[in-house]
Length: 143
Image 1 (cartoon, one colour):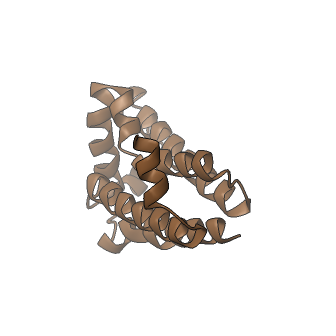
Image 2 (image 1 turned 135 degrees about the vertical axis):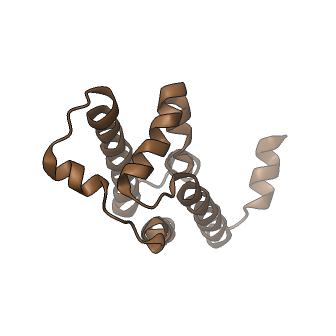
């Protein structure tokens, strides 16, 4: 029943590309709102609070990654653009995990990283995921 609903809702390739692109746009906004903080240290601290409760909660803070995997499975599209999206999202998640491990678990922060953690992050920076991943997904689905 659910599969029929999804199939009837997404009819043509163009409609499918636009629908998936819109969903990714919304998920990127949600992800940006969940991770927003004035500094990199604030972002890592916010993510660490979820990581401390459960690593699964930490992974749930990245819904656009799971959606990208769903799009690959649903459409069968795994071209250059889709690989770039998934690879960048994987690197992003593991980079955040490494920062959490370095700052909160090992408590060994190199001086250059300590300086980076206190840098101010402009508000528009959190919207770069929209500017990067949304067009890439659209291009991936149009090929």
